[in-house]
Image 1 (cartoon, rainbow, N blue to C red):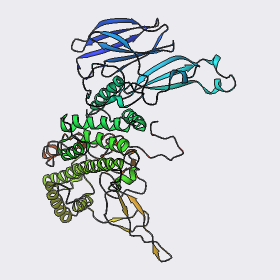
Image 2: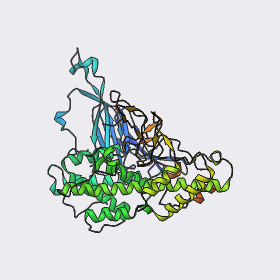
Image 3: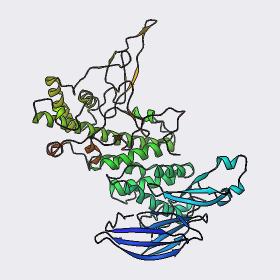
Length: 493
């Protein structure tokens, strides 16, 4: 593996049949490797090696049925224990005695979970049933509390001792490793796969919700506010929402996922999409959920503004350069401009003045040119009834079928990118925010470093690229073809 902190180096671990492994460090400039040490780790052949935490930690497994953890200090490795008092981990007495050997080991994308493939001793299994069914098992261990370094990101003012059953030092390592892990996903080139981060936070939330809020707030302070001041949660969330315009789209996607899947996990995604539920300020828990709900809605409005502003700017830039059909001059062309203009009109009190000005220009050009990208009239795909624009999430047709004198309307999902009514068979579905997408967003939307309504430098220099993979414009994760409930669920467990 090549560490992010020192890309000129390459760490190489080589397992041997005698149970030892060697560590080599290579210089990428001259492509030469130097041996740093040999370690007698196991009694049988090494079957798996996995680097973690940017090369600071190494996990080894063997046919002797043991997994060991090693930390790199300087040029040498030192063995450290694997955390045991972490959420969801069973004690060693609960593990089956039939495990015979370890066939392999792997680390999750966020480096918070360790997966081991274990084989069974056929002599300890029931000959009639278990031998036929049990071939191997995958065992998952939390390693977010792994000792890695000297805890540079700890919070001495937080009362770790308030959580019985969790060692204070282990919780401090959890905080340090969580902040490190989520920071790695701020890299635009790295796929946004953070299921282990979400699973860890949800596991903690079952028993220690205050600790989860502490972790997320610490991330907001370090990432969005660049401050360690002693502010209340309400003030922190309020200040974070005011600085969204200077935050990268990737960080906004991370915040969107954490808010939905962790802080508001009790609420259905469909309920959140309709401007959120209304809470009564009767309990502290409801008050906290209201704060996180407001933060989420403002975060998604910022992302939608970027999508709409970019679409408007691309449209105006393209028609100014060509009097012909501009849809043939670029890789990605905006659609649903009329619906976007109507959305700006519905949210005039919240969107920026620059966006209002762009919407006015787009409306004048679209109506005059009568382009296919600017079509305000929409029809239901089931009954051909007219559809009005009331919300960017869903639409209801006027209905043409009359039964017993009553006109029945259909509920239609709108595309999360174009805001147009999706066809009868929508193409993509977001497992996080439960939105449909029939047209993919441009690549530039996911690489924005801040809110820049003027995108001339992007639209003039080259064609706007189409996404090579289907990604959600609000969550940044890979979209899926929605499967029926009776099929294998795509959600990680």
